[in-house]
Length: 243
Image (cartoon, rainbow, N blue to C red; front, side):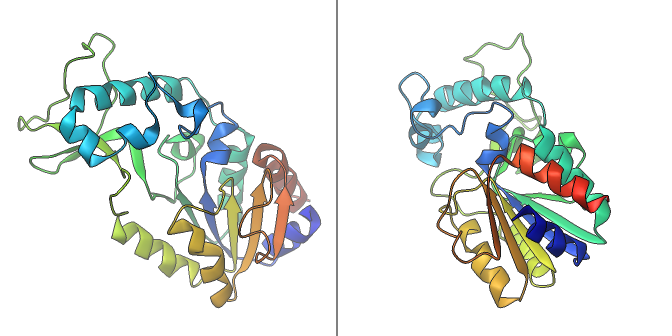
């Protein structure tokens, strides 16, 4: 299967990439869904909502500061660096990630769109300003982050029940419609609208490659489905392309 993927990449000048939680899990970042994501008996669906923030912003920020602490200690893994190498080999490249951990830019990826936002940014509820943010070590856990305008800051992420940024989604679709190949990596294929990407790619005659630990709902419709760790599979592909 890797040989087939390599052949597709060799015949491609433009590559669209979609990444999900699986690629971050290889850096030791929990998915924050299910048992592994429980925090003080709260789940992500309890806290990552506009309603939860309106009801108890201190609690929600405490959770996000905890998440920031975990993510800050994580490092990009071989899969992240392999995608950087793939970007350099392509005339046109776009990486759309569902992850909010900032690991792709840290690894060196340049053309990155964040579908669900970034945990290290804030958005002001009063003036709308978006800014980089990480909790200062000396800040009290009960202190709510405030904007220079005095407004309350919230994490610049897409919460459950909120719409994804339409300009990011549209830019992704515009690129995908002209891409030679699409790589879907570390995502279960159940989170919409990103789950529609393999089918959208097919309509554009874009070759599709999936890398995931186990079969997904899109495995049967992609051109190549590879089961394995992205951190092991992608470096092999990059090495083969360099020969």
